[in-house]
Length: 298
Image (cartoon, rainbow, N blue to C red; front, side, top):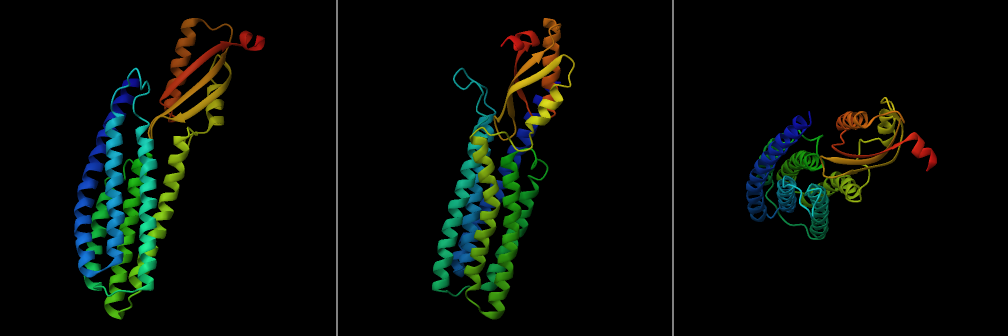
């Protein structure tokens, strides 16, 4: 059974890595097109979106690198392996996006003060291409988006990028038929707000995991309630749960066991409890056991 879980995890990593590679290729190609067109049309909306998409390429690349590092085996110095790199990548990705948001906002304010002429029809065409590329890229991560924080972040950002591109298309039409210059920086500010909103949750969750907080979706009380129902377990205390990576969690705990349990029974009980915890999204478990008599004396 443990082998099945390990095989599934390896298969998932391979599938996710492939999705990141395709996402990087598609979005990098679009960034080149968007930057070139943004300079040609003098559109801040396109340049802002291109800058945001470039930061997305960087975050996808960083996440891919972290996933590859996470596959490396543990060493005598890194006894847990390199799984934590995925959490650090998620945190770095959030910071990169916030920096991009700041630069978009600053440039938009400058454009409000000094509006410049843009080519609305070209903006709409390029942004329309962006809707297709971002949607296809996001769908690459759809299947695994609830299994990993980096994958979920990639999916949400790419879907939001598609929505932002739709906004740029609308802005292009408005500029073409009305000639209103401030629509371009206004769309840039809307992009900034959308990106900030989507990034904040990723930042806070990544920061919590970096500080070894209990991962979202894991309830300590539920774990305790389930474990004490097992025959032979009288109580459980000193429970600690933390994230080893964005997909793997670890736990340590003290089990207070029935005095009558034999050594082989204790070993079998611990094996069963660890298997139960895998279904609660805890993959690495260390139990310290003590008898009721010993616990009472302590």
